[in-house]
Length: 120
Image 1: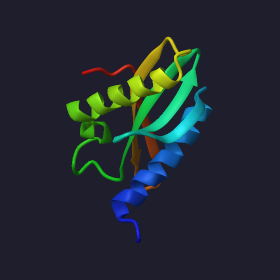
Image 2: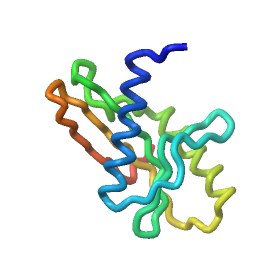
Image 3: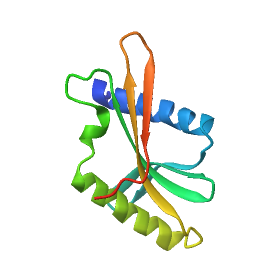
């Protein structure tokens, strides 16, 4: 089945996001990590901290900024996924929940905004 434009934008955003995170000192452990009904776009580490990262990508600002799409339900899902990950990997003592907002401009200029340590 063919992917929609929104799915393709999301997939492209995750690729761009993983590359940007690497360039900014993160080590990627997992992409699209799933447990039960919960999924985390990127699990990465930097300076001894585990980061569960939700990537949101938009091509325009017509419907707001990408990060505006992360609501309380999504944050709670991130926390549930994080709890499951920690249960499987108890060696991690420090964990953060982050949002990586990506806007792919019409001129192909890409803007990144990492919002670290978000909470409900």
